[in-house]
Length: 311
Image 1 (cartoon, rainbow, N blue to C red):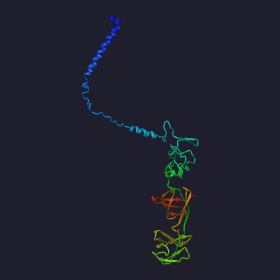
Image 2: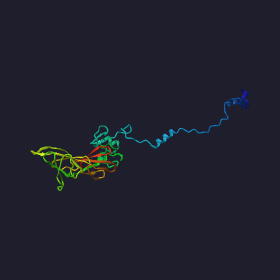
Image 3: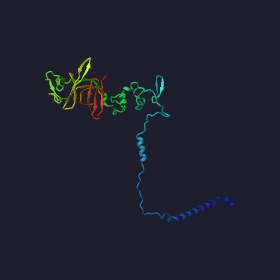
Image 4: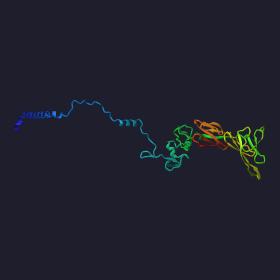
């Protein structure tokens, strides 16, 4: 121990020499195993330099989401978002939970579904999407008040303003007494009276006599003749009942209408077809009319639509 203390440098040099000799021995041992390690390697095989395409589906999905970020949607409330409440007559209530409708007949839930201002007192008469139909009309029709392509039927905007009947030019004036020959007069007094039987044509017209029904009623304690002579248009097949001594309305009676969509006026002859702007592809037909209402038919769907008289 004293020798190591007095010859410290020599001792350190000796230890280093021993370590170096050990490393040299280990390297020599490993070099001898090189042929065995590389014996299984095929040095003649060409390396593959092709690049395998990475799976980028997840990247594409993330890019799609970033281009269409999520939006807040109306919901019934959460920890962070309260249900809407309304103060009415000094009381606070939830319009979605059994509260009275703020703008009847429109339902509160319908107004909230389309994010309409239910606090606006004139919301029923407003036209949010500028399609010329009010929110009330859209609610009744079940259409979307925020989408101008979703509209109620345009016929909803039609109102009858005038019924213009044309007195029929023929009048049944009675029978000759035998119940087989009937007297028909034209409204034009210059025309000749005609005596006709069942199945005969009325001269100068497309009509023929097809049936007769004798009848009467008591009015003001007097017996009144209400017998009916029925004639038929041989071109159209339309039947017209002529009541004794009364003028009938011509099948070509007219109706005058106000179209509230653009405040225009239409005059339509009974049995004629017409269209309503802006949908010129849909045709309607005036099939019936009176002083109180008219009836039109949608020729595309076959639906019959009542048109009420204008206020």
